[in-house]
Each structure stands twice: as structure tokens, then as C-alpha cells.
Amino acid sequence: MATPKSFLASVLGNHCPACRTGRLFKVKNAYRLKSMNDMAPACPVCDTSFSREPGFYFGAAYVNYALTVALWVAVLVALHVFSSLGWLEFNGFFDHPQTFLVSGVVTLLVMLPPLQRLSRSIWIHMFVRHGSGHQASGGE
Image (cartoon, rainbow, N blue to C red; front, side, top):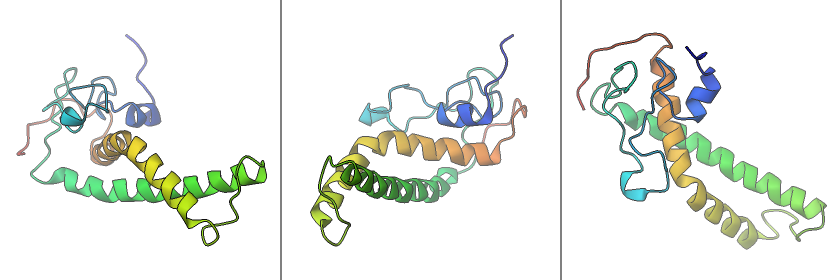
């Protein structure tokens, strides 16, 4: 039997928090927009229920908000680094707001599907322990 994935690999790979092997989402490709949020009802490996209770994943919106703020900060830092390397002219948000807003919005649109899935993965990993195995199905 293969060694289980680490916690971080399980979260980033959108794997089951209990067995760290099964997939959380029905479709592996996050950019299939019609099925972006379609989660399996339970883990195909250990049968842990992913339907915790009605409205459980609303809490993932807070995680998604934090990830989005971190993404905007990363864009700002990247623009400053590119400016210091001489690749573009960027003296700060107040001098070049259009550069910051356009690059931030484009980056956010490209990263939105993976961030959405990552936020759900982080949220369920906060509430389900590794090795908890088979759990009863919930509501949703």
C-alpha cells in the first residue's frame, strides 16, 4: 500500500481529508465551468461523506476571500519586482492604478476556478480528520 499524501498535498490536490486518496470533485479539470463545483457525494475510496450539512460550504467563501486578498497582494508584489527588474514601469498603486487593476483582474479571472476549489478543499480539511474513515452521509 502506498504511503498517504501529506496534509498540504491533500489540500492542494483536492483529495479526501480522511484517506487523502479519493478526489473531492467529480471532474478533475477546474476550468470546466459547468462542473467546476460539482463534488462527489462521498469519497470513492473510504466512503467519507462530503455532504456535511446544508450550507456547510458557505464557510468556504471566507477562505476564498482570504485567498483572493492574498492573490491581489501577490500581484502588487510581482508588479514591484518586475518594475525593479526593469521589465515594466510601476511606481506604485497611486501612480499606475490601471496597471494594477488590469493585471489583478486578469490574474483573478484566470485563477478563479482553482481558487474556488482550493477554498472548498481547505474548508473540509479543517473539519475532517485524517484517518476518520467512513462517516454517515449528511444533508445537502
